[in-house]
Image (tube, rainbow, N blue to C red):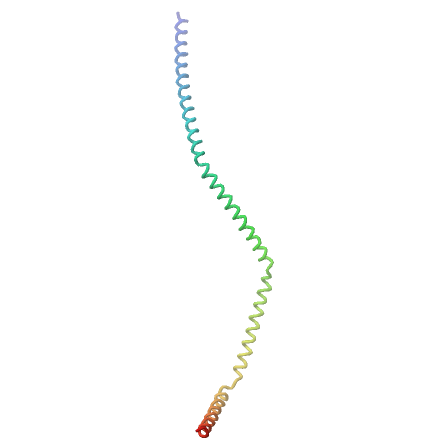
Length: 142
C-alpha cells in the first residue's frame, strides 16, 4: 500500500510537472510569435526606409567626393606655397622700404637746403618787375 501511495504521489508530481511544461511551452510559443511579429514589422520598416537610406548614402558619397576634390586643391595650394620664396619676398620688401626711406631723406635734405626767405624775395622782385611791364604794355597798348 505504501508503494501505491508513493507511486500515486510520484504520478501527481509527474502530472504537475507535465502541466508546467505545457504552460511553459505555451509561453515560449507566444514569445516566439511576438518576436516573429516584431521581426516582420522591423523588416517592413527597414524596407520602407531603404530608398531614403540609399539617397543619404548617395549624398554622403557626393560629399566624400567633394571633400576629396577640396583636399586635392589644398594639397596643390600647399605645394605652391611651399615653393614661394617668402624670405626673398620679405628681403625685397625690406630693400624697397630702405630705398624709399633713403630717397625721402635725400629729398628732405634738398628741401632743407632751400633758402625760402631768398626765394620769397625773388618772387616779390619778379612780381614787381612783371607789374611794371604790365603797366608799360597798357600805356602802349591803348
